[in-house]
Image 1 (cartoon, rainbow, N blue to C red):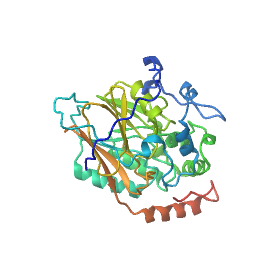
Image 2: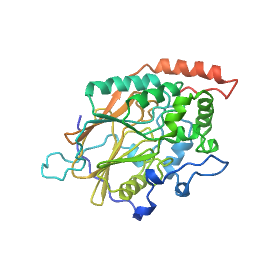
Image 3: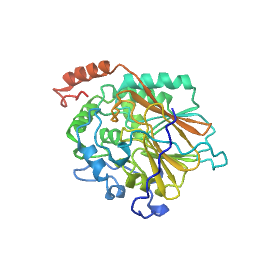
Image 4: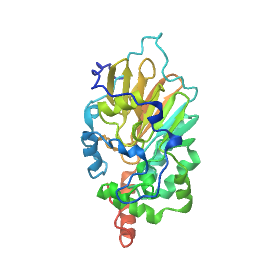
Length: 335
């Protein structure tokens, strides 16, 4: 499905382009042991979220769709015109790449997505972080992703279970899930998570769990966050996760456009620079409970996909895990 083009939005208020030295990059990000009311690096002196995203972040997260800023109020994202064959190619991918994010310990959703991805025969699999948190099978999800992913980022939920972030920075449900996950996390899963970073780079693509401004915490859910990330990076394609909301944003000249990318949406990777969010595997928050993934194709397009999975089985396992863990670390919350 290729939705009809929409008029791009006017440029939001000007945001100063950061210097190269100030841009958060994988090599410069280091986490220190968490201390009360502390942040790992200078990175966290920047604003964590926009006002809309902050409301989203502070809310109890159980898979429901919430207010998510200007872009999410769009009913669909539109590709820029694909008819202009002379336009500059933005993402000259030589490989077919499947992109997933925000698995959150939901093994059934992960299995369903990987089964669907296998039929596409991608050359590589990239994961944008948050393998654990909320869901009942953190160890299994870490092992599956470790075995299949060619690239994987660390998300904020991964970092907090390692002690790299303060658990007090999380909402109550997320904090309870993190404590439970810490109590059951296996050594091999911990070792895998320890080796991950919240941002990375591939030829023509910048990848962040959150955003370029703050790859751990910031939600890209409004115009300012999207504008900042696109202007803080130079690659033609930027991939982000964290919000659990599939998005396709384009920046062409001074005009920013795009929005929510529903399952079946196809976006041409030509002309404008793009910021894409594949959505969440384990806990979607866009009103569609199906697991989400993104396919980047050498034919210069990106396709957003949704996959059914047995939600009732995940919910039952969460109740069982919460019952077992209540005496130790507090119950796991069902969504």
